[in-house]
Image (cartoon, one colour):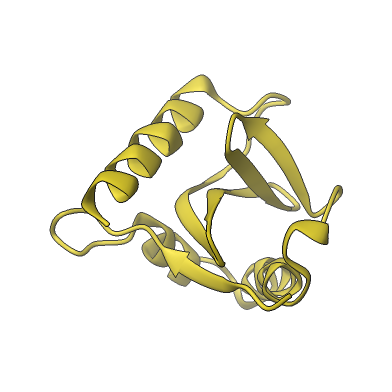
Amino acid sequence: MAMEIEFYRDKKGQSQVEKFLTSLSPAEFNKVGKVLDLLEKYGDQVKEPFVKPIKGKIWEIRAKDIRILYFRREDNFVLLNAFRKSSRATPEGEKALAVSRMNDHLKRS
């Protein structure tokens, strides 16, 4: 099942995830890219340790200490926000931001 990767964009057309990815080292970028490739190729069949359910429809991509929160919409995975994880649990603020962006994306599309 081929899936598409889509970046959430705010009302100004900006993508926090794209900005975050461009700030990564080449090695970090490659690690994230491998997980994104798996999602595109295998869709929902990809499981831990590469992805993990977080809250409701929100999942996280896991690449070392890098996390990207996303959700599935039809044949797309929409990347909502990205951050470096510094604690064991995913911060509540990051989860809330992902939910807010998901709702905004659904409302505007």
